[in-house]
Amino acid sequence: MSTEHLCRQAGSRAGIILRTLDGSEIKYSLVSEFRITNNVTKYEALLMGLRLAKECSAKALVVYNDLKSVVNQIQETFEVSNPQLANYLVKAQAQAQAFEKIEIVHIPRTENWKANQLARVATTRSQESTQGVCWKSWPLSILMT
Image (cartoon, rainbow, N blue to C red; front, side, top):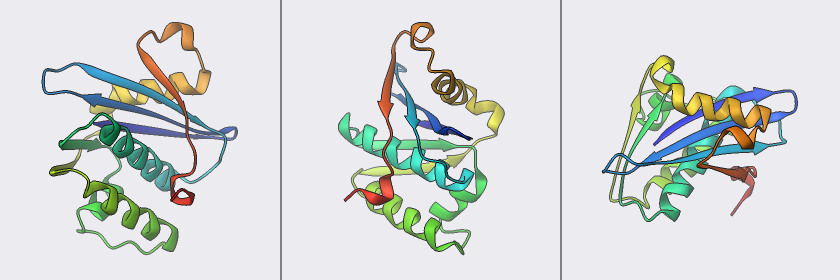
């Protein structure tokens, strides 16, 4: 699973790609009207990706993320000082327990270009140029039960 986010005045956008073992991809462009920080948006995209992977009945998951601080926080090699991010971390760790195996890997932003492209497409809302992409409205995960 690859995730990418964009923060804009008009709200947040994200791109998520779920890849199966045979290499096929399920692509999502997510649109939300809320404005939040980059780190919160990255956690939101991660939470939505975990939820989507669970809906697809995934048992094992490798998550590729280009924001090193979020990867380090989830791997517990970096402490979370922001209380809001701590709540997101707890929620991400709880959702991760739904999988038999999960690994989160930091990748350079240049290697995350497909998810980045999906986030940019969500910004333009150009659905006609994105055949095979699932569009979803994106609620605030931390407020959901």
